[in-house]
Image 1 (cartoon, rainbow, N blue to C red):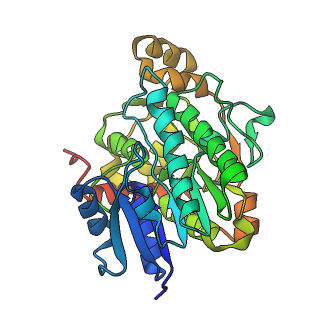
Image 2 (cartoon, rainbow, N blue to C red):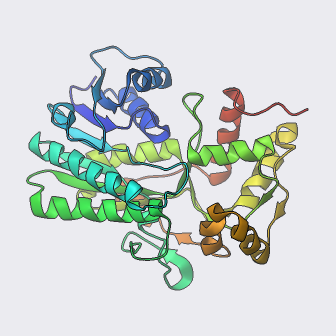
Length: 341
């Protein structure tokens, strides 16, 4: 057992629950922020129960100051995983950008005031690779320009991460910052609650996605994201660094469907088998504004470099195919996929 206490924000989410479980498995004391008793129950279910002296809860929200000082008090580390993810992109970008930015600053301010050694912020590839670079190749030196024509969510990740680095540089006191920039996060669920990414696999298995857009993106396993958070929390080499997290080469929607069809047999009978052309996607986006971001990303195959995390922290992620199969198996195991008839 380890007497060090770690604050994890957003412990009921897909990433947060895996981070909490990993820390408990490693012997840490964990405090996680929740917004309601229902959220606390989800955490308990996800981690399979934990003694009260190893897992505790603090009520705090990203949009308010209340509770953050108490949440950070007595903690050695903070892992700031929570971030707003809209079900649909709002008309007013500030509905996403402001809580993401101000929430990160609230957490960092509380960490500094509590004398926390290091905060690890969960950012995103969205903060790195949505402003095009030559060769569509990206590493940790790249940044998405918030002024570019991207969704409010993408812009929020870039704005929030920039604000975090600026705060630590100007007002951070003795606290250190490390940042994790994952691509699309898949992998097994710890409860019957699909995330945005795992919901994509569910939609394919349910037959709710008969055709797919010609879009490629990075995939990383949630267990490997949790592992990278813990490495960034404890390794001296991670101080002041950001780390891209991706399990391998970018994969297309159709590529995901083919992996599922190859490995899941009859359970994958309804996965899509056709990819829209770019022209068809553009035409569809005229009727459905939700497809406009897909139009912006159509045809690109980003190359996402993870050399830094592997070299500095010894990180070694799972293969993308294994992650996708584990995602699907988990969804089926939790009874979240409609039976094939």
